[in-house]
Length: 182
Image 1: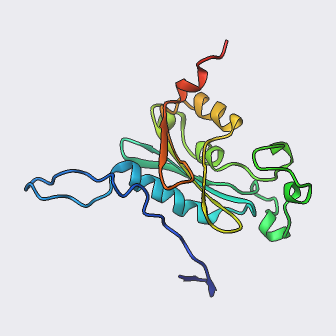
Image 2: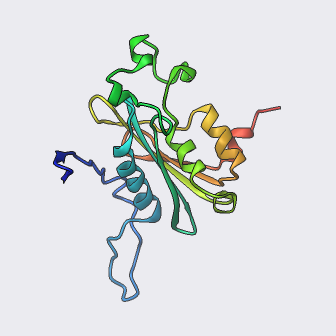
């Protein structure tokens, strides 16, 4: 696909091919994707906008099967992103994935999606998160980090669906994150 003379690829993974809506009104088998498959694939497409060199994440928030907000990981508005600058501070310092987020210049996809929605839209919503390795493009585990988990809880989002990095997905109620917490 070309946009403004530049070529880019959007890789949409046919997630969870076993999940399909059952029968149509006339008793014929319906090959439409289920809602989770549909929205997790959209989250994967949103990740193509990410500006992180390490990982590209996309998030989609829905309510009543309607998209209310999307977000991808990237630098805050007005700040140069890692792709533009051509370097990643955490990579230069050899910091492993999942550590020392305070050194990262990006806002996470989940946070950007939450920022773009109203409190009313978030309460009782579902968030879908999909991610890919910035180097080889392979799907990666997309479980929210601890900060994003706290934001999801405070936003009153009731359901989280994220890719497991192996072509499947995990579905969780955020209230489960509170178990074992005093």
